[in-house]
Image (tube, rainbow, N blue to C red):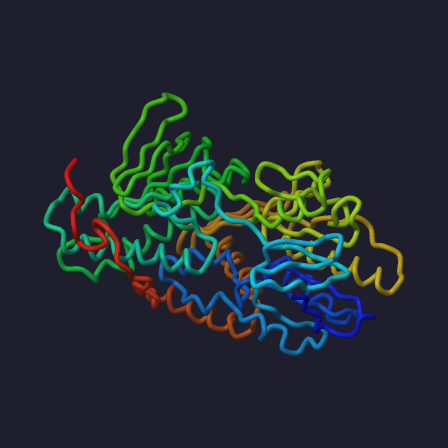
Length: 449
């Protein structure tokens, strides 16, 4: 079936696929443009992904970092929201195809469906080592982390208890260091008085990173600072270390320098090692019919105006786009990149609709990057400026609060963080997503081999 309820045929139809940073900022920036905007997402909310790790460790509730898309666009009269799963594109017919059989027409198409975690050909690891891209991922990781402490409290076997209280985070980028640091603080401080048999502070948190340093994209000075901060809160960092196997009760790693293999007995693994683009990028390239560059991560090559070469009405943004910066290197998959691309694409569309000259090529303004490593600990860099500690942490706090989509989210998160800081407590330590499982999830030891 063909769906066309956005307005009359003469109105310019802009379809935005994806309610993440790129899609959201593009659709919002078209507020005063004489077009009809249709935003399609398989979820009914915009998710602030940089704070997912806070949900995964009980610091925030899911609603604190998610905002309903219909509420966001409630007063934007030229925009509507459709909850649907896009499965393909009819480029020649200018239609977006959805799982339920709808064909949504467009004059201009913007695709910004983000990325997911990349297991480098080992997709069977995904159930054993979940990544952190969705609310479901966050609540599942929270369930596994908190359940490990609960099971350890009842476990009489010291060896099994040790395995339950060992947590492995794979990937030493910003997400990995944030996750490892927060799990360690959760064990050392938040849960310290909650159990009677075990001492949560004895939990072992390991961060496994293939590069010689954590947060390898940061300046060397900040890499060292981050490693020092992680050590201060008890995180063991294993650099030059690659994962070779993951099983329900162990992780096998190989040291790059010595080729030594080590086995870490654990039942809780978090994956933060790599990402790949949404499959919709490949679907769009295939629909165009060849000649479109798609890299190994699934990103679609776009030109200086964020559109696909030869198809000026097809824009690809954010993690899905392969676009080179001023230095000739691909732009990083960061939220600020997607936000700026979204606003830029909206400007291009606005000028075309109004018959005005095109803007100059897209230029990413790098306002800096930062990573938090627990309470009052963070690293940040902006151009030649590099700082760490409390100042970096306060900057991280302020920037993340300001980027939340709704004012109510900003207030709730700020109040929650103030309480967490003063009390070292976390109010969202809830074990949800319970379901029948094998082995230790039911308190049953795996059969001996």
